[in-house]
Length: 110
Image (cartoon, rainbow, N blue to C red):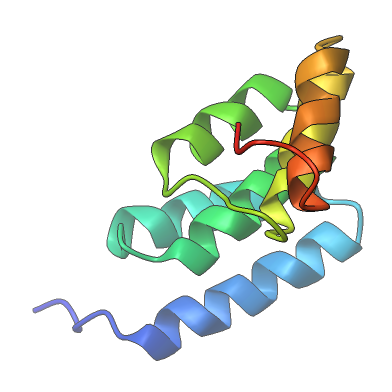
């Protein structure tokens, strides 16, 4: 019989993913966070951390897909900076600027 998944399990694995990302192992962090999201699909923390891991791994399109699949980030949400960086790396500079302006409270929500 499988053990029940708990919020503690999710939190522990997210800390481990953070350690992996800080050790320049973002692909491994992303894999771990994908596992967490599969077990706990409602975890916005895991989704946000995975978007950052994808960005660090150079997986810019996946970063944007993951952000788009969740609740849209609003003004002041650091996820907009992740989105802006991914857009910039893909050469979408106007959209990247809009994301940063929205983060700063100067633009309309993207």
